[in-house]
Length: 206
Image (tube, rainbow, N blue to C red):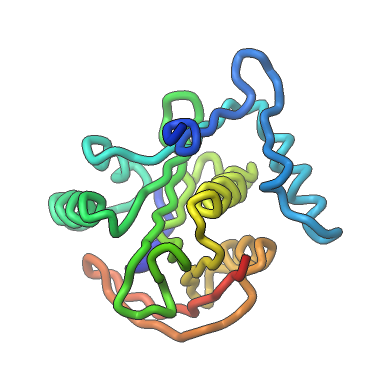
């Protein structure tokens, strides 16, 4: 399942990261930041947005309706039922970015797929439905969300990550290449709620 580039109008400590709270201390895990000269600008940008009080955490089933703020679902009940089933079966997790109490971004992680080029449980995770609300785009929030999700999944043992991106989504292509998704492994086609997608599947080895 793809549908990630449609443009929209303890355990607990590992699954929730709060950045720059009331103490105004930058809580950046330096091990999760990218290395190398071409990533220096990205790392600096990610540190700078800590002042915006961002939280990344896993979404709960009873919060699924909040996703309608980020994507124009044609069948909301179908979205709720499908994601509920897959979350309860531990096939996917949905990580969301909050600015204060407001949901401003999402990124889904799929852990199992019949096409093992996409996902293999415990080894390779497919990242999809990557969205940031249009009124906070251009602030580096999407990069921050992607970095945190990759870091969280790496802590669970995942070392390979795949993404699907359409040819005309220049913003996503740029972000993914910056993060090392540079190995083309497949050309895919699918439909979701009446939307048709044809995209390249890229792999990042960790």
